Amino acid sequence: MAETIELYQQQLRSYDITLEDLVRCSPRHRDTREKLMQVAMTVAHDPDLLGFLKNYSKLPAKILVERTGLSNRVLEKGRKYIIATVILLTDPNLSVLKRFTKIN
Image (cartoon, rainbow, N blue to C red):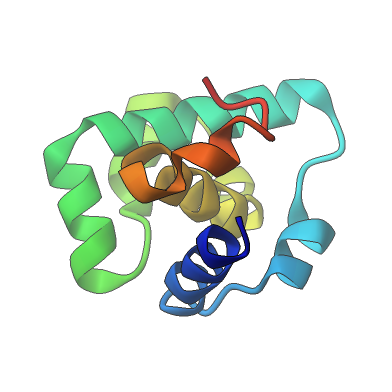
């Protein structure tokens, strides 16, 4: 388990995110959390969006605004949460961590 957490931290660091950042920026309201989770699933299940995230280490905000209908402000405030969730959704080595989250 410790190795899995270390792997996750390494991947987060490549996007300039720490676990402490996630604690601070995680949405408090359930509806916001659900919306950001939907954005993360959109990115995780679209090869073009996922490729953009991996190649440029940032979210394709303009495309996500169009596809999700969320404002750029909401996406920017939830950027770290979205990226952290995409990492959990797409890396099979982190499946153990998914059991401790509300990610299916």
